[in-house]
Image (cartoon, rainbow, N blue to C red; front, side, top):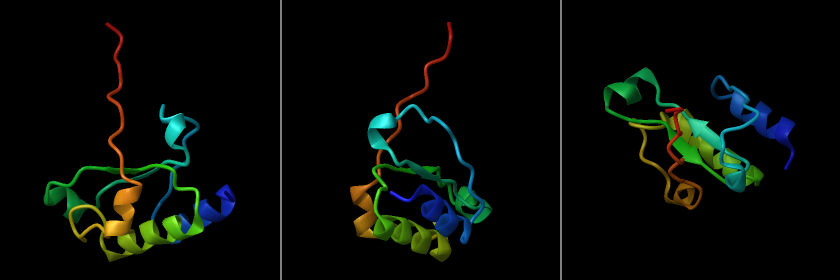
Length: 93
């Protein structure tokens, strides 16, 4: 996967933050889409996509974000192949 091209493609649509680790290495490349303020107002939560190792998958995510993303635009069926629920973070006790 050309990570620079993937980052550039997504950055053309929305602000992008790069993280060294999200604790889901078995799902790399991982893309997390945060809802817009309109999406948050509609009750949307961040959506996690895993195994985004294909330019077509990146383009599908970019198109969905362009349409409004979580809480605003319906999720295209093809993206269901990539959606996953991240593990809960453990806190020190």
